[in-house]
Amino acid sequence: MASILLTGGAGYIGSHTYVALCEAGHQVTILDDFSNADRSVPQRLQQITGAPVRCLEGSVLDTKFLAGVFAGQRFDAVVHFAARKAVGESVEKPLDYIETNCQGLITLLRAMEQAGVFRLVFSSSATVYGIPDETPTPETAPRRAMNPYGFTKIAGEGILEQLGQNDPRWAFGTLRYFNPAGAHSSALIGEDPSDIPNNLMPFIARVATGDLPELAVFGDDYDTPDGTGVRDYIHVEDLAHGHVLSLQALLRENESHLVNLGTGRGYSVLEMLAAYSRACGRDLPYRIAPRRAGDVPVYCAIPDKARALLGFQARRDLDDMCRSSWNWISGPHAAGKSG
Ligand code: UD1
Image 1: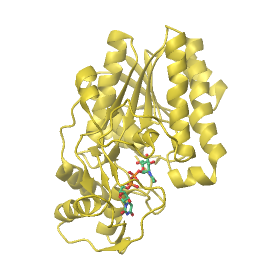
Image 2: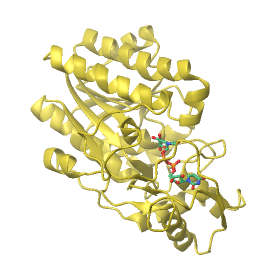
Image 3: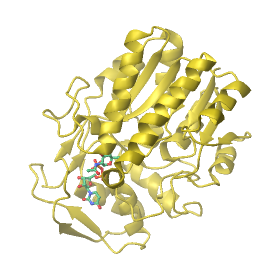
């Protein structure tokens, strides 16, 4: 059993990872500023795990607060989710994104160094590939920033690489997520943004509940089997399990790794819509709209490295993602906001 600090642990992926870490027998403390998470998440996590949830409220930008967190408890490692993640907003507020995602990371690393904690799992994204030359995409593909959000993930990876290469005390698990989807099987936590969703599955979910009239399919003239964009969707519970494996590898080997977390299988927008229609029991309305600026035709992982290094393999399929999302969004707990 290890003692883990989970920053951003009340958010969408963070809350699922909390459950996975507890199930793996670890002792977990959440740190969250609740800027994009619902305040009832800790209580719902307690319902899922059947144990009290230790949750500290504060920001990774707050040096004093972090020093207090590390002074109050001995941690073996940190899993770091606390960051901003909306691409469009990052274009409007680049400095906010650089501040939270880069300065927040550095402030956290400093606090860790002072406390003698040298293992961290980092949330990266397939967005670091920009428009990839090859799909499916291996980890060796070049990194290209398409927007400030992507820049902050590339910068974060670079900061960790420099630290790892030059100071042997550190070891990092860098995880490049493809497209997380679905919700926890309990329907107690999931993704439900308070604004109109940008991402596909939460948008379809809101069409399914009747809150939004129809899905706008952004382009049907891509060079893909049905002309719509293809993505590698991965169930959020599988993704959460990937963090457990990454953490355990760090604690076991004390050696850094950088891997894609995806399934290796892509689905088109229309395939997603059809799968969600099956899950909610009715054909969901859509219209074909112009392409969205900056969109890529296909994003798909080569997942082999995560399997070889961590023993990671996604187990849940598209129907599981849609069914769990529908159970969550049509249940009593989705209230606008992730987590
Ligand atoms: C987006 C971000 C990516 C980020 C990821 C986080 C952009 C351009 N990319 O990825 O940087 O890491 O979210 O999860 O914002 N679609 C529709 N109608 C909609 C919404 C989406 O047709 O209303 C389509 C898109 O064109 C795309 C697919 O659905 O083909 C998936 O879109 P989305 O869920 O936004 O994810 P990404 O674009 O892959």
